[in-house]
Length: 213
Image 1 (tube, rainbow, N blue to C red):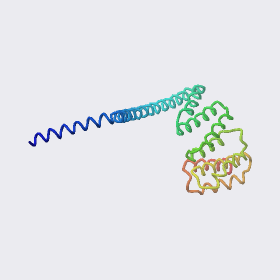
Image 2 (tube, rainbow, N blue to C red; image 1 turned 30 degrees about the vertical axis):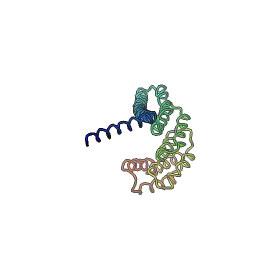
Image 3 (tube, rainbow, N blue to C red; image 1 turned 180 degrees about the vertical axis):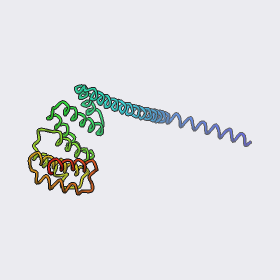
Image 4 (cartoon, rainbow, N blue to C red; image 1 turned 90 degrees about the vertical axis):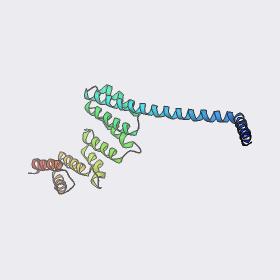
């Protein structure tokens, strides 16, 4: 008797499942399709992003190789393409490389433009902007020494990793402009600082020997 009840119960359950299936099969199929499509889309995006990263890295190293071979025109094309396609990190690196290419070509106006572009970028580490300014000041023959010193003032008046090198540059520009007394005072002050490297201390001592002994 119990077996009969079990069979009836089983048939009822199967019948209920069939009714549920016929009633909701469109929704169930749609849900499964959406789930499968979502997984496939996610995997495609993941694959595409990984492929894009490899392409961008390859493009960057191709550009470095062209610089090494002194094919500056080809290198410029590659780094300009990177700026259009890559993330902020590769964009910053590409601008630095473009500035360096134009320095090698002695196109100082274009070099300055690329350093200015770095300094105008949003949401990048301030150290990159500071480094771009230091390189612009150091490498440009178009900027007067007084203007260079004025541009260095933010480094000279506040603690910064670039403060020692900015102070050294200021001394050199003062010497070039024959402001020897002021340069000597600043040199002696810089030599007393504890945060300068041994290499810089040696350079400053050499400057002292050449110009002030």
